[in-house]
Length: 179
Image (cartoon, rainbow, N blue to C red; front, side):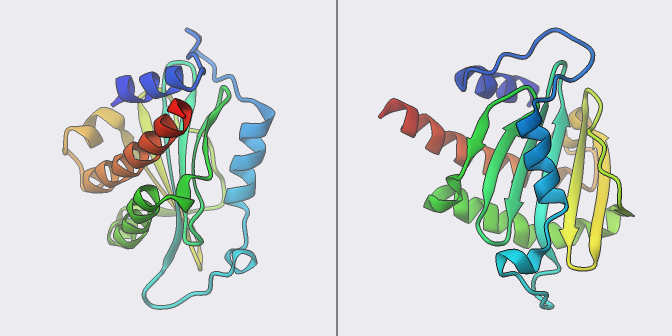
């Protein structure tokens, strides 16, 4: 999976520097913080028994950057790279929108594997962290990207579902760049 994200970052003009610490651009941190502190009512979302999870972030630490997937119940869908760039606003396109909705509908099955949190650190290299944005607070779970990708953990199906969203977003981004 890390090769896929590295290729996507390269396609978007974002090289991953060979460094140990993450280079985080101010815009990245601002966008991430906006999502993590967002009141769902401000984007028109209210709690129902059918939508306990109103947002999902999946963050994976790579050698020089973090990739953050954001899917929100209002249709917002973005992929941010901590060292700059990303894909923003593709939730308006049918493929990414449907994939994002499927991820949000799937996410509640995995809440039992997450712990409540009020802090939101970035994952370390080789780790993937999920943040479940719920109406009663945020929850988080973290595991090795390799274990998730190899279907070794209960969170593996969610990891793969999130990568379907990334693929749908990438396809739209590539078609927009081709035009």
